[in-house]
Length: 165
Image (cartoon, rainbow, N blue to C red; front, top):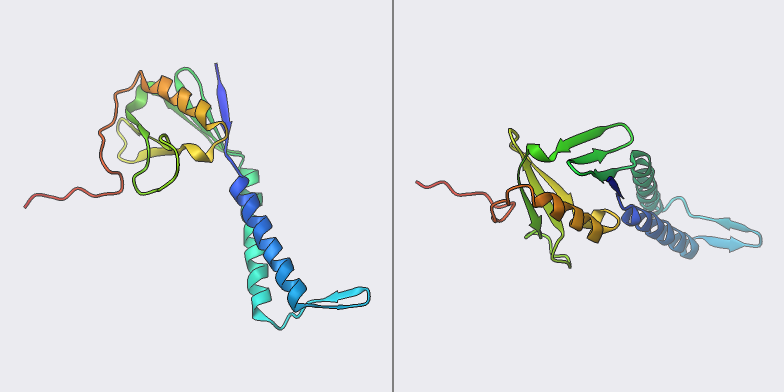
């Protein structure tokens, strides 16, 4: 049984729309209406800054749409899929897994982060649950996988250990 979870793009849509709305409001206030024409004052540097923000937000949105990120969970694998790349992780390769919350981020929800470490790799994999659609179902699937994997040590992620002198 294979379950796919799409990456949420809500934030990117909201960001692009908000920047576009602020730009139009500013242009409407700053511009002038003459009969059937609308002209914007292009000598104002704030207009250029707003155009830059709108362009960056739209480019980011389009790039994330083209990227088409998905998280696919099967019986024995976790697959990170983008438009061009496919990364498979077998459950047998996972050294430990922790499902919980991130200490440095203050968001609602008990389960907001899934961290797991692969055997033979130093870096951890972090899955932020809120960034995927159907987050409750994602947590259920990850808890099912976590039953077959040792639990991770409960330590504060992001905090370095001090060396004894």
